Length: 134
Ligand SMILES: [Cu+2]
Image 1 (tube, helix red, strand yellow):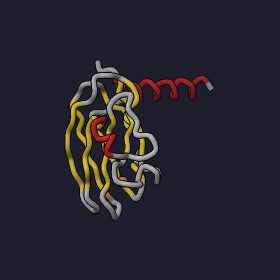
Image 2 (tube, helix red, strand yellow; image 1 turned 135 degrees about the vertical axis):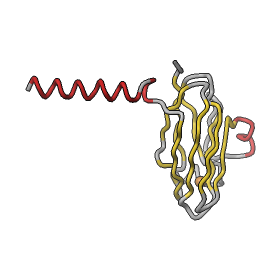
Image 3 (spheres, protein in one colour; image 1 turned 30 degrees about the vertical axis):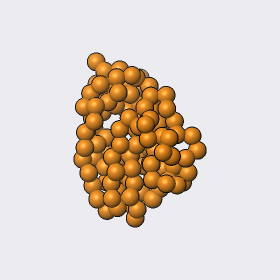
Image 4 (cartoon, helix red, strand yellow; image 1 turned 90 degrees about the vertical axis):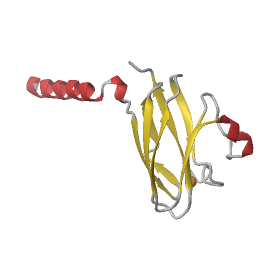
């Protein structure tokens, strides 16, 4: 029993060491489908350059839209939400794109939505968690 605990503990330590920085990553790998992000949650380090590898496996265009801190779109994504966008990338169906952006400096949760009409309501949203850098 003691041995098992030790192995589990060792595994936990190694996992924590490998992830570092609270499990955040400067790379976001995201798959778009009709109508969801996969995965739906991303943890990134504050203020660092983030590489986004986005692939659209759906049949329609999708957008990966990160809202500014403290901003949410309400029930639908509309023109009034455009000014509250922190960063976005749009990918055509069947295409892949790699782009970069600088993560916000303010740690916290940021709303992630697809800005294509009706997609948010269909469940295409998630969250970006920004954690303090080292
Ligand atoms: Cu979409």
